Amino acid sequence: MAESEGSLHSNAVKKMFAKLQKNWFLIGIVVVICLAKFAPFIGAKGGILRPEITVKYIAVSAIFLNSGLSLKSEELKSALSNVRLHLFVQGFTLAFVPGFFSLLVKLLELSSLNEWLLKGLLVVGCMPPPVSSAVILTKAVGGNEAAAIFNSAFGSFLGIFVTPFLLLVFLGSSSAVPFASIVGQLSMTVVFPLLIGQFLRRYIKDWMEQTKPPFGTISSCVLLLIIYTTFCDTFSHKSGEIDSSSILAVAVLIICLQCCLLMLTFSLATMRDSSFTPADTIAIMFCSTHKSLTLGIPMLKIVFSGYKYLSLISIPLLIYHPVQILLGGLLVPVVKGWMISCQQKGRVAGTGTV
Image 1 (cartoon, rainbow, N blue to C red):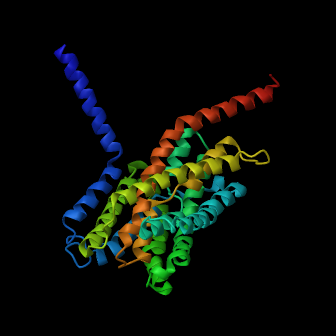
Image 2: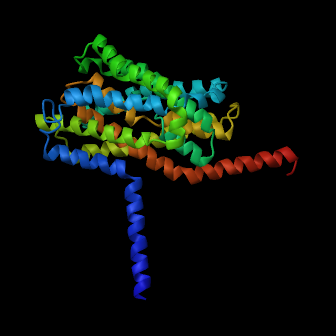
Image 3: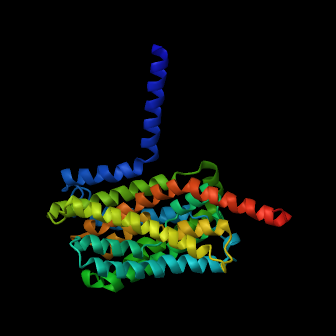
């Protein structure tokens, strides 16, 4: 009996550690924000970590060099022909969503919600799709993985140029950073490292396939450093105080927005005159509605460098990231069931059976 109880306890502990390990990055975000609140002088501008050098140039460059090394551009060729799907995804995520969020924010400005959180919501709309989560969820359901890989990678590349432009169009009046300065830093810390990573990949591709370096973990760790120094700056200036009710309201709003966007993309992709397959529809759903935290935070750091409300503007994006993963995870069995049902109907129609 005692052995049985000990075994149950051991299994429970293992499950708990497995969950913690799976969600370590989300836990890490909470931890680094708490550390920033406790000792902001360490990561603030001019502090021990010297973020004006280590983060602004080295950390951001490291993330995009890592992206260049890990981006499997050779796998994208097979997906190039599906132009209609690509236009739908890129148009939805980089044109429709920013425009929709802009109109929504104008309406919400009449409410009591914090203005900087609303600007942060607008920032979320301008972000490109992520390289990882949309692909992982599409693969888990059995959707068009090649299309998901192409659109995530191509959208991220487009986002390097489109996202800063959108941020300046919608939030330009809030930033004193000149456009030329932004373009220069983007070239130095984003475009060049990405291209260098792709160039190096050609020569070390076989080694990477054998050793499988933890690119995702490396990027996540560097991203935690960027988030930490961003909040250190805010807490050191005493300018980031905000009530929890506003954050909760934004979190609920983000959940509702994501649900609406997922339903909208599903409806559009499955319209009667649409030529998208069920596998295409799944790729469209996740690639069109997900937004990149990995690319988003470094871009905000560049466009709003030295801006005292940067951390508040970042909060909606920090909320959007885990919500899209949690919602996507909950949808996997539902969408998978729908796809299997579509395949069965297709087989029945093909054999002429009623």
